[in-house]
Image (cartoon, rainbow, N blue to C red; front, side):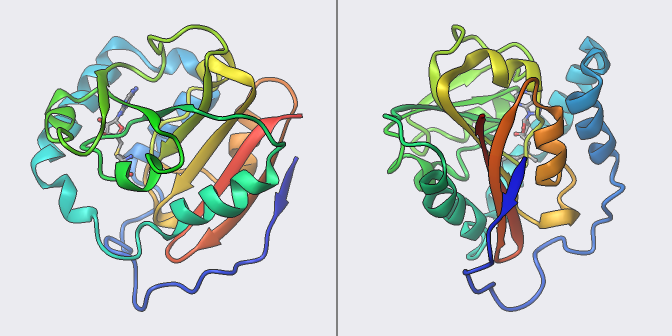
Length: 217
Ligand SMILES: C[S@@+](CC[C@H](N)C(=O)[O-])C[C@H]1O[C@@H](n2cnc3c(N)ncnc32)[C@H](O)[C@@H]1O
């Protein structure tokens, strides 16, 4: 069950970069399939997605424009405040790419591990992301119930893995940087619906983006 919080952050002027991109982008279909049809994430699909993002790595940091951080910061502020209090130290930034968001996350979670399929992306995260691992979000190389938070920022949701690795008091922090136009994005109620078992959460929007924070009920 998701509660929607009022919007409190002024958006940057103008449209989001790539705002014209259609919401029926092929990556949206892959995102829905990953969340709701886990068997759809085949070796062939993994290979094609890796190849795609390897090819985008050189230019990825050009997406780091002022204002893109608004939904991340709002999720860290109001989203985490809404979750039940817990000691939170260890976080994963799954699909963390070239560390584009790391500087916003590490002040809150000093033990931050950035994971990505794309080696080309990870190689560019040197100096931004403190710990970097090439890994697939569908089979994370971490123990059951061992992490306090998972960030999925414009990244695929593999619900079974989120359920497996999050500590009992852990939180999933979900961000669509361009709201409904984010190709690898889902609305908060879909994230809630995809997660196995009973979850609670809050959602809102900030600037160009939307976000939600989810925890076990
Ligand atoms: C749309 S980009 C988002 C990158 C970054 N989080 C951001 O906000 O700009 C998606 C990232 O997820 C990575 N990725 C795709 N599938 C993945 C998977 N199964 N496991 C881990 N990373 C994956 C891609 O290589 C890419 O870096």
